[in-house]
Amino acid sequence: MGVVERTDHPQTGLPKGADPDWTIPQGYERYSEAEHRTWTTLYERQADILPGRACDAFLHGLDALDLHGQGIPDFRQLNEKLSGLTGWRIVAVPGLVPDAVFFEHLANRRFPAANFIRGADELDYLQEPDIFHDVFGHVPMLTDPIFADYMQAYGKGGVRALALGRLDNLARLYWYTVEFGLLETHEGLRIYGAGIVSSRTETIFALAPDSPNRLGFDLERVMRTLYRIDDFQQVYFVIPSLHYLLGVTTGTDFGPLYAKISKMPDIPIAAIEPSDRVFTRGTQDYARSGGRLRQGAA
Ligand code: HBI
Ligand code: FE
Image 1 (tube, rainbow, N blue to C red):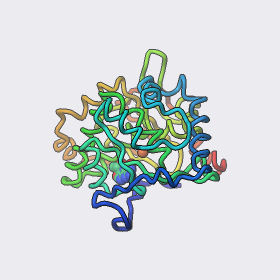
Image 2 (cartoon, rainbow, N blue to C red):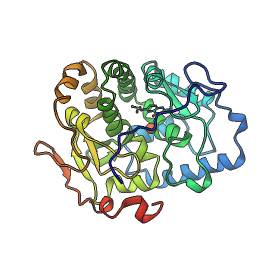
Image 3 (cartoon, rainbow, N blue to C red):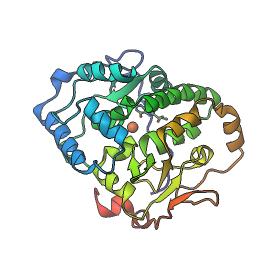
Image 4 (cartoon, helix red, strand yellow):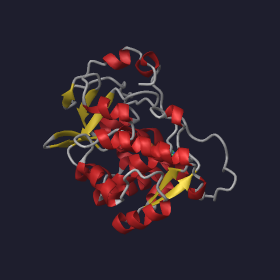
């Protein structure tokens, strides 16, 4: 399994029935009992293991949104609570949308969430984000005012990165924070990344075993670091606080940073650099063992 940049952008054009911004009706009334049961199963599995692993902002977000596992949530009800807290709203989309569309939504405090849910036969792993990844994974953090500001700043940064042709660098920032970020707390490392917190197996993997590297977050370092989309991460970056994360985006003109790193090589996914703050010097045993492919759907 090589290291791949995320290239799973939609190949097709605007889906039938979608607005020009790719939004569609959620279709809440059309969900089957089986689909609601899938959500509840996924929710209950995470609810069991997240206390003590997910960060406080995430757990508080679940409570604030009353996201307690009674089937697939209705975006209309969720948006009443969410918009009242931080002005964010969920908009339903068919799946991955083009980068420019994605960033435009984030820049306007609209979170694009897929309206489909995974099949009962693929509970543990799916390549494309579904409603459980997007809503359970991403939305609770949007109730935190600081993270809500970060996500909007990220969206604005994305619009600019596209204009500068530097999407790859900015996508890595998203990947190693919004999707797979860890937070340093007095009680130890905690999860805030949606890709981890929505996955039972990676919730365990990201904090416990000594296989992956866990390194202190540094903006330039992260923007140069390759990532993989097909298995557990081999490196997780740790931020000292959500305020810190917001600080690195606001007020920083990424233009000069992009120019500087464009002359530097990408950093391999499992590398540890001399300047890294090392929380875990990983063994990489899991990746070396062939990961998901060798061990089946983990
Ligand atoms: N579309 N619906 C959706 N969700 C995403 O997370 C997403 C996307 N399109 C593009 C994209 N992510 C990535 O290019 C960004 O993470 C950089
Ligand atoms: Fe995501």
